[in-house]
Amino acid sequence: MKYGNFKGLGLALSLLACAYVQPATAAEVEIEPGYGTLMTAVADANAGDVIVLKEGIYYMSNGTQVIDKSLTIRALNAQTKPKLMFTSGGISALEIRGEDTDFVMQGITFYEGQSITNTPYFEVIGEVNSVALLQNNFTDIEVFVKPDYDPDGNLLYLDKLVVVGNRFVRGKIDSAAEELFLFAGNSLSFNNFYANKSQSTAEQHILGNAFVLDNTTTVNIGSTGSSHSRVVGNFFDRLVSDDSSSASNAYLSPVYLRGHGVFSNNTVLAGRNTYQSPGTPNSIQVVDFYGSFAINNNVFHVEPIALQERDNISFNVRDGDAHFSNNIFVNLPNAVAFSGLDRANGTTLENNLCFSEVDGVPCIEHAGITVVDDLKLDSQFRPLAGSPAIDAGIDDVFYRDVDGTRSDIGIEGGPLPKSQFDDQRLATESAPYLYPLFEANASLSNNGELNVKAIAISKLR
Image (cartoon, rainbow, N blue to C red; front, side):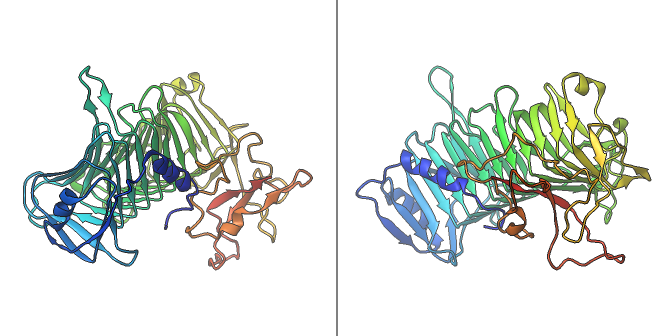
C-alpha cells in the first residue's frame, strides 16, 4: 500500500473473520461485465458467496440496489480493474443492509456515470455486522454509514467498519461504527470526511491516511462526549484559494477533532495557495480541538501570511484541554497562540520546536513551552551540544499500533527510508531521542547545509 505499514490490519481482519463463519455451501463465481450482470449474480448468490469481477464495466440500473446478505465482491486479481457505474439519472445507491451481513468489496473502481444527475451513494444502513472496503477507487461517490431504529426508537449502527488502502476522489465520507472503526492507508482528494460524528461508541483509528483538501472540504473526527480517537501518522494538506470568493472573510480550519484522544505523528500543511488568488481569509486555524487531546510529535507547517486576524490564534481548544509536546511548528506567528480561556481550561505546551518566521516576526522563545532550534547538527546529522532536540522525547509515552506492536504507521511506502527510524536508544547511551529526517539523494543548499523538514523519534527498547 502507498500510505503506511498497517500491522493493525491483521488484527482488524481477524476480528472480522471471528464474526463471520463461511457456510459450507459457499461458492466463488466469476461474472462477466455488462448491463445488470452484477446485481443478477447478487440475487442468485447464497450468503457467504464470493463474486469475482473481471476487467470491464459493470452497469447498474437507476435506483437503490440492496445487498442484504454476506457477500464478497472482488476483482479477479491485483492487475484486473473492474469498474462499477450507474447508467441513468436520479438518486442511485448501492445499499448494504442486514443484521447478520458481512460485506467485503476489494479492488473495484466505483464511479459516477455520464448521465447521472445526482451523486450516487454507497450506503450502510442500520445494524449490519461488518463492512470491509479494501483497495477500491471511489470517484464522485458519497459513502454513508447511517443508523436505523428499533421499535423502541433506539439507534442501530454498523458494528465493524474496516476501510483500508482505498482512493477517494471528491464526494463525501460520513462513517460510524459501534465496535471497530479502522480507517487506514487511504488517500482522499477533495472529500468532506466525517468519522463517528453521531456518537457511535467505537474508538476511531485514523491511521496513515493522506487528506488533500480545498476551500470547502474538511476533516471531522469524533463527537462530543465519550468519543475517543487515535489519529496517527496522517498527512493533511489544505492550501486555499479564493474560488468564487469562498475564502475571503472566512474562518478556515482543515481539521476538527471532538471528544478526546491522541493526535500524534501527523503532518498538517495549512495556508493560502500562493499560485492562485488567495483572497483574504479572516483566519486560518491549523487544527480545532473540541475536548481533551494529547498532541505529540506532529509537524504543523503553515504557509506564510496564512493567519490574518483573530489575534493570530493558531489553534482552537474548546470544551476541554490540550497538551502539546514534542511538536514542530513552522511559520506560525509567535510559535503558538491561544486565547486566555484555553489556558484557563488547562491547555499546556512544553518541549516544542519552532522554525522560521511569519511577516518578519521570528519565532519567540517561551520558557518551558516553545524553544527555537537553530538546527545544530554534526557530520552524522545528530544535534550538537546545546540543541533542544537532545533528550527531547517523552520518557513515559510510546504509542503503539492497533495490534500493540511497534508504532511505525506512516513509514512504509513513504518518501523516507524506514531505517532512519530504527536507531535503538540504550539505557547507557546519551544519544538523543530525536533524529532529523532527510532524503539520501536530497540536494544541498548553496552553503552546503542539509534542509531538514521533520524529526524522527528513535525507537525505545
